[in-house]
Image (cartoon, rainbow, N blue to C red; front, side, top):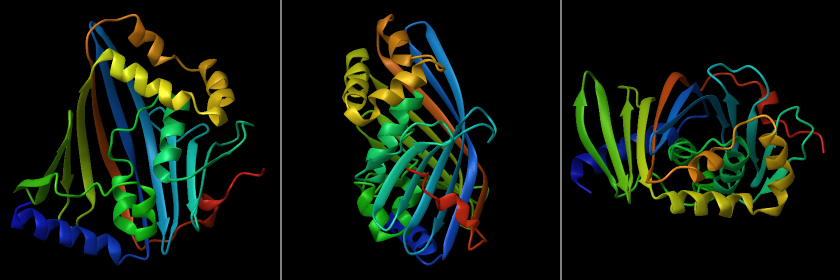
Length: 249
């Protein structure tokens, strides 16, 4: 890692390391392409964090935060993923990464690779639960344009571009990845084989198209592009305690 990137990542870590709370919201547009098929989806999201280690991530189907979200709640080392108000049992998970994988399997929404990057900055306990540190030696600070810093991370066939505002809040993220049809199906099969989410997936399939069935019908590589636009990022603001509530068991 070059010195310029290292200095920038240290500033970034310090910004998030010293906040008492953090919240954001925005929109993700994902495009999946295989052969001549193009599948587009939109999800809105919100993140809430209160130090030392309380985190909630909420993901909605569609462009606004209406309807019932899929939620991931992390508190004192315990991670729960659930579909709000759906009458489906909550799933206890061993890490944030595991919870996200389960939520993605249910919703047919695949993580754009960045959703756990901000939690990884906030607290050691959260970083450990994210499995790996997103902002590592694979990052490279490309340039600073119009007061925004542009950071790129490349790993295998996934390239993530992140733009930060001058106050080091995330402005937007673009992710591009490519894998073979078999790799995509194998990856998805591994997730949906988890016993605790089979019932949830079966219920979800009644309401949402199954992207794996679409992929099976096509030939060629699967290419995914996503753009995550942050419309709201706030440090040290008031946060309603209800966002950290576990569902009734």
